[in-house]
Amino acid sequence: MTSVVIYGSQYGTARQYAEELARRTGIEARPYDAVGDINQYDTIAYVGALYAGGVLGMKKTFVRLSSCTGKAIVIATVGLADPTESENVESIEGNMRRQLSGEVFAAARIFHLRGGIDYSKLGFKHKTMMRLLCNKAKNLPEEKKNAEVRAMLETYGKQVSFVDFGTLEPLIAAL
Ligand SMILES: Cc1cc2nc3c(=O)[nH]c(=O)nc-3n(C[C@H](O)[C@H](O)[C@H](O)COP(=O)(O)O)c2cc1C
Image (cartoon, rainbow, N blue to C red; front, side):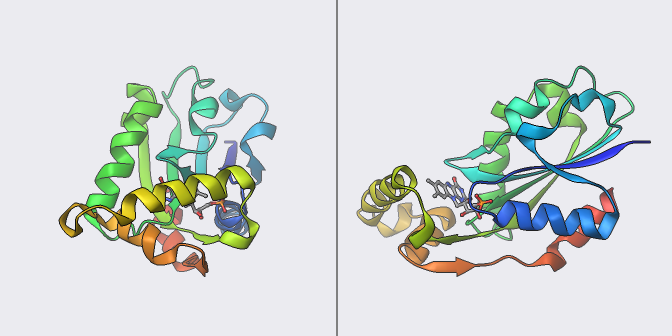
């Protein structure tokens, strides 16, 4: 049986989770753009960072999978929004449903991990995006600010890390 941990990470938090998962399971970790033929694997764990609702590299990776039959698929998102808040999970999974085929979405065990952000490391495009998003969010009436928006506003401009390798346990159990 061949297994792989694939990750999509821009600034390293999803990679940290993927590498720790690989270390704990003895499965090799690879970035999504260096996977080769995904169909050769029976067990696929995907760890991807959330960017504007999209899971980095996930769509590109799973579109190349011709069948889920006999495969174990685990997908973990890594974002700033707190995954213990059910409204965040609903929003993330609603977006994932649009990025995956019905077959992959149904076959995958889905988990959500919390990442972090360091504004001093963001590239120009991401800094600008966050400034625009936060300026817009700031002016929302309080009752319209959901947990995701509040997390974004609370961490704006800062360096924060919610990375907690202990949260990998359920994922490891699922593998
Ligand atoms: C432009 C931008 C958009 C983001 N969009 C989301 C989002 O939609 N949901 C979320 O929970 N986190 C979002 N984040 C936070 C990232 O998911 C978080 O920083 C994550 O840990 C990044 O992973 P990486 O370090 O592996 O790239 C966003 C961050 C940036 C810079």
